[in-house]
Image (cartoon, rainbow, N blue to C red):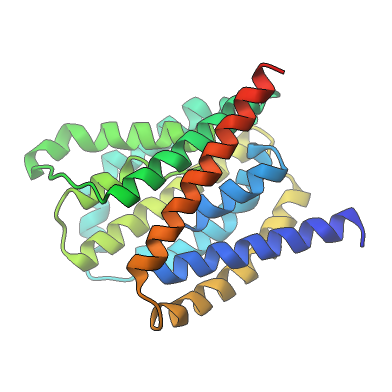
Length: 252
């Protein structure tokens, strides 16, 4: 089997698994995909492959629900912060040295894993959103540009707003659509979204959708809390490995 065929097979398997995770617990496709892809390739290349499946699979989550226009207005400044932050730090992801980006990605994955296991919770008052939302968006965008992962701190923040269930799902969908879209644009502007990568990203879309569909069926038979716990433990292990690899490379 040629190297190209091996690459396509590996990408298909990774996105099948990442889609399965998203189908079962509702989140995690970009996180799992970036974490696994970055073990075998530079984070910038992994991010370029990830963005199309991430945008498409989150489109329905953003569009579905009763309050898209209201929530889009409410979090407009936060999404603007995401775009600004992503473009501000995209150089860390696209630079010639990838050890910093790899270590940063591992740190974000591990932090998200610890957050998920701890089940930590806090509440933000509505009046505080005026200044917190743009800041959260900016930090999320900066982490997106530097690592390709966009769950921290926006997902915990949205969870802290005590939104109704459907509003929370739709709000996360808006963020999960805008973040990879901003990353996609930033990569393209910096010449890191070439035709070959776009083709690989397109190949990844189908297994991601198949995985999501399968995951939704699995969710009916498993306790999501159990699967979520193992998922977060896996993120901690993967993130720790990536940090260790980055440190070892830096001092090699």
